[in-house]
Length: 115
Image (cartoon, rainbow, N blue to C red):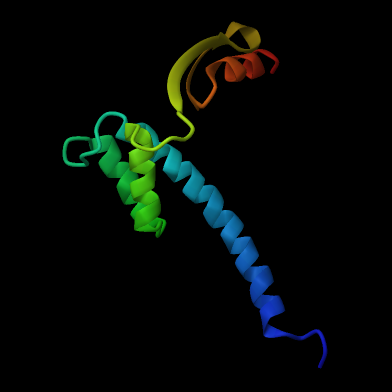
């Protein structure tokens, strides 16, 4: 019965799940870090409270959540995400207002100009 190991099946299934979970966690960590800029106390910061609820619904580990909050308040080094608004004109002269979150404003604006 060569090639029928249980681990081969588990590895393939677990790998796919880990990729999905990693994408979700990355998005939630970014939301938590941005929300934590307004204050690390969830009682006084409703946006952070909602981000923490999303993290708990996704079964994010508490240590990861704590680090995301610390990164947002500036206690830990890491990428600093910035929120900003852009106005642009689309096809047919349609006005578009975009709310953007990025770690590099200049790069994002340059990429949007080339679309």
